[in-house]
Length: 138
Image 1: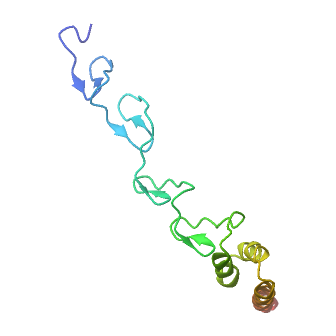
Image 2: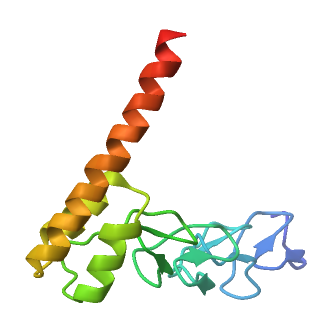
Image 3: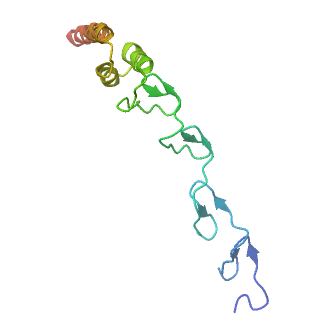
């Protein structure tokens, strides 16, 4: 009865009676939901690599790998499916995440390089643990 003489539309929703129409929605594109009436549609993120520019949601695609982790979202790199020996060698030798370095080293085909990297990892880990123990003794 409130809209007997016409609706007062605010986009897709009548301000008088609450009825909705399927036009002039106010979409939250990342959620895929109209802010006025709640109608749903597919999400429409604006991806910049692995991060949405509008809502900062991440996806498991478009990463910018910098050795052991993505430089955009900091996700640790999964080396299980890597086969490029030069990339594995770089991660094993220079990575900053211990567990990823070990996994990359295990996948190296060159046994000499593998032994050098293991020795380097043990040496750097020993240095780190020695510093940590000195701090704890203080």
